[in-house]
Length: 296
Image (cartoon, helix red, strand yellow):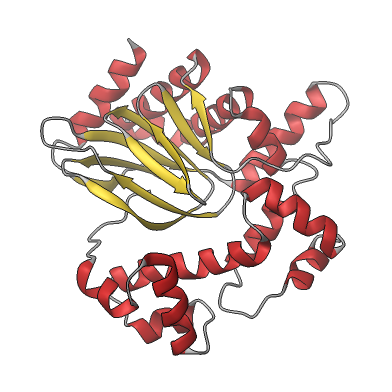
């Protein structure tokens, strides 16, 4: 019943297709009523919960298709392709995106491990990339309690951060909890490297730079990075840059602006690598793709 209540809360606030921010910071509601092929995107640390329909995310060729029986956890910033290939007026995609606050997730992770008796460390275990987790009772009730605040501005102001903390705790304790705790807890070198990279995407960063950032040898860093993301560091950097550039082009930037923004100093190199990854030149992509609002 709780899931149906969540669905009703979203439908009441989003009767038409679209992506909207709500009064809860970091939470967006979406309704999609037409099929959208998977296109390049960059996921930030996020939970995506679906109430009806199905959604798809592709990471390094691996397809993750999910509906209202699973929610998606992305515990670190990742270059993916995402779409809604089955959405229609008759069967719309309805759901919400919750951007995770890294500071809150780190604090909760440390508290959980301390309370469990010894501040357990996950060194040697790489964080998982995309994770599908069951809607257990804890997650469902926490999400319902969070969204119920929308009916009362005073409750929202006073209780909002506490209810968001409760939801994050439910994620950390649920089926995706191990992946979340590895990404946000002690020993989260790969997640921290990706955060550093995301903030310096327009700079020329080498594997040595990334390894040095977290105090690892190049060989150990390369192995752990690939275990965590399924991609080598060089492949990951290239995917992050090209996906980010594709999104910028789709949103109206020129090809040269997009290339420069993500660290390419040669437009010809950018065009070659872009076409190799997406099968179209950047200009063909610009003409073919329109993204009025970006869905996670």
